[in-house]
Amino acid sequence: MKDFGNAIYAFGCVVAATVLGIGVADYWFGDHELTAFLSWALLAIIPWLIGLAFSYVLARLERRSAAKRKKDEARRIAANIAWLPELLGRKD
Image (tube, rainbow, N blue to C red; front, side, top):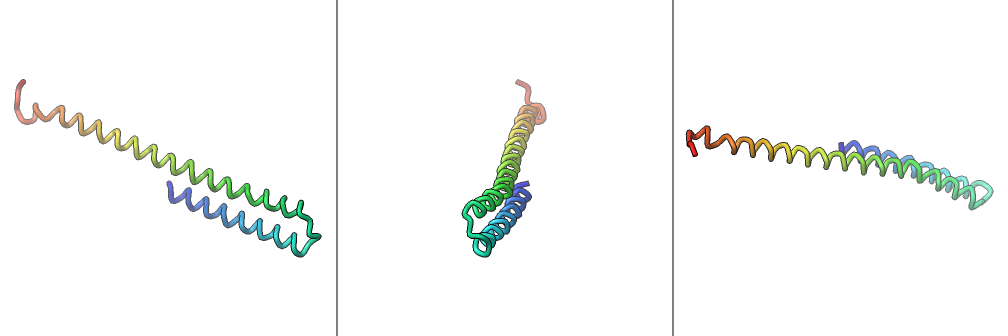
């Protein structure tokens, strides 16, 4: 999942860089209006933030599922240890 989140983040960065490049070209070859460039810059932030959010959420889900797997493994080991005296034939 984390790799998928990183891929989405990378795609968001590429889209943001492309949009920002369009904004720079519009500023250089257009009317040289700063407000137009800032509008393009704000548009470039949107896909970057979406990619960053996906990356964060998917990494967190992966950490949470790993913690759940560790907890399930600990329960399984504890259950097996509880059966150990019975399996060894010891009576307390």
